[in-house]
Length: 259
Image (cartoon, rainbow, N blue to C red; front, side, top):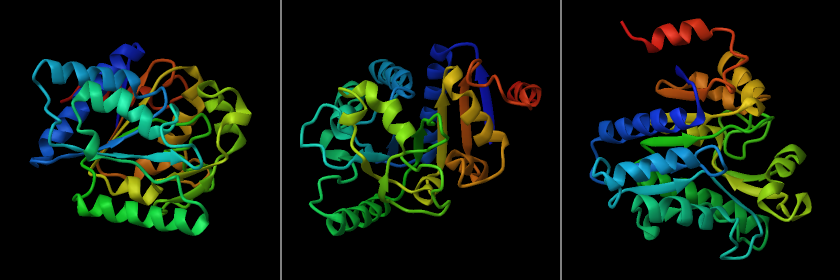
């Protein structure tokens, strides 16, 4: 795992975009597959990727995108559904065909339909040849996607209940905590680990404890993001505030400097 610490969130976005672009290029596929996170953490990264598209350094017209997760129960077209967020923040600016965007199905009428939709999502990822580069954020409680603490490290796409902490943190996107759905469909940690490259972005002091637990704590379901330690090609790009509680900072800086 590579840990890169940059001075500011803007620097994080620029460096993470380069790691993503490099990973897509290394895939050497006519139709690369990009794993897409939502929330505030990757917005700067997406803006940098959009700038690369405008500059002709990146072409995603033949790419496919797979979202990490989706809320259960939001009506079609709800502005805070992750499909709508990705259409706004990714498809338009990055030139990704909306018809090539896949999002977990949270519209099932009952648990059986939701479970069947989750299984189908796994099949669609496999049919696309797997994810080449998965973009990730991290929750303040260490969640990855919507894999809350206690999630099985080998889990696949499934229905999950959101923790009170996550619903409180996401209330800013809704009218308040009561407006945040209680359940989601999320890629599992095992699904995330199957991607060829993982790129985690984190900024700000609110993420410092979770980042330290994920990168330097034990590999544990108590901190779902700790699965990054298990991946052969994972890069965490952090600003100074998010990296503030790392014990091995000197080593990370020396490693980033190269031979």
